[in-house]
Every structure is written in structure tokens, then in C-alpha cells.
Image (cartoon, helix red, strand yellow):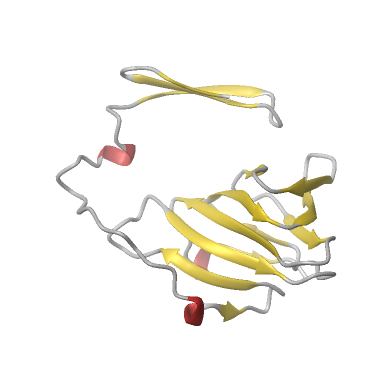
Length: 156
């Protein structure tokens, strides 16, 4: 559930059982409409990278001009489980685009996931995902603040 108010945003995280309220002028981290230029960023399949984490990543938005956010497209092949890892100081959200899997996040019971599900992963929380289907599991990984290699900690 997401409820937006004029100058206050209320977010409810059902899996965490808590509500947070944040003051906002409608633009995250003090950005205003004049500090960002409108653009359409096209997906480039050739930019996909095979990672040691056992998944394929395509960075869609991740540079110093947007330190508040990064977005990557992740792809996990059938039968593959990604490596246990955590992000230090970075919140991660998985938005499942296609496929089916099983999400393991420390602190909650492992759960089956599928198209349109959202997984909330607090900073410093161990996690991994398994593709349980017969087709690729594809999801967007949205990180705040943006993902940098320094925040990644492999746990295997």
C-alpha cells in the first residue's frame, strides 16, 4: 500500500510490519524538476554482464548524476540460485518482471515469487534468489542510494 499526501509520504511495508512517514516536496533527496533532464534510456541487451553472483546484470541507471537511485535489470537462468550477499548502506527492491522463483531474505520466511511481486530488502540484509521455473527469471533491482561495488558484500 502506498499513500501520498501533499507534503508527507506514508509508506507501509507489510513484510516488515511497519509504517514510515517522510517529509517530501515531491522530489526525492532534494532534487527538483530543474536538476534532472528529461530523457528516454533505451535497453541495450548487449550491455548485459555475466556476474560471479550467478546472474546476468544490465545497469539501466547508475551513475554519479543520480546518486539517490540505481536501477538494474537482473536475469537468472532456470535452476540457478544466486550467491548469498548483502548490500551495505543500500536498500534494494526487486520488482519481478517475468518468471518464477524463491526469494530468501534473512528475517522472513522464504517465499515463492512471480510476475509483479516486489521484494523489499533492507540495507545489510543477507539475500539470494532461486529461479524455480523453466524460463528466465527477470527482475529490476532498484537501489537507494545507488549501487556501487563498494556496498556489495559476498557471503559465500
